[in-house]
Image 1 (tube, chains in turn brown, blue):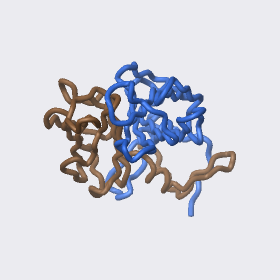
Image 2 (image 1 turned 135 degrees about the vertical axis):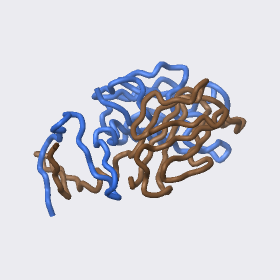
Image 3 (image 1 turned 90 degrees about the vertical axis):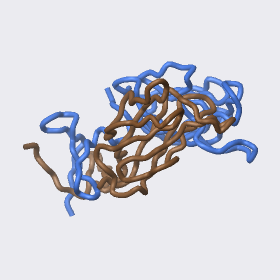
Image 4 (image 1 turned 60 degrees about the vertical axis):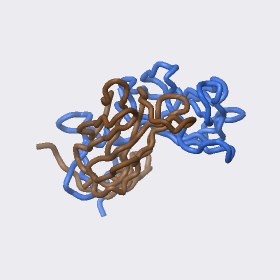
Length: 124
Length: 141
């Protein structure tokens, strides 16, 4: 079994310190880079069990380890000019959330190749 | 209160895997995967310049609303997740995180290409923004 350390603070040899609460609370609990073109699929991810294809530009992400509540932060970006990933666009729960990619010019849902979402909050 | 003084954390079983316990105590997660590998707050208008950041070696102004943020330590692959937010500069513009790795560019492991736009179509609607924030998660090399 690997070793286990219980500590409240981490400090570098140079004297810079940080409370471990910042490390635990400040770390992203999930992230995913994904496409909705043709097949909705992750190119790379962490703590993501699956993605849902809910139609054109309409997706869902599901967590491997659930969050403690639905009140997490989900910053995002779309990988193309004038497109935006709208997170929390639909069902949001501790185990996953829905979202959409839309054209900022027309508000139409659209499939896009390079979308990113990061999840910050408390794990269950 | 306990305190660890160290310059480096390395997993015992696997060097790249240090596990932390969740806030709720019922799950564990890999510390290395959750930590942001780079972030930047930069001025995108006039002379593009970093205000603050982490793991960024340079900022290149490629033209209106078009920047390259180069990492000091490169990622393991091109499939990193990037999110961001920009300041709106007019009430006539749509607000929101209109920022990303433009489809015009190939994603690479050593940098991200960031574009900022106002409502419109294509590169002709790119526009410099005073405040641009970007964060990168993924696998470091």
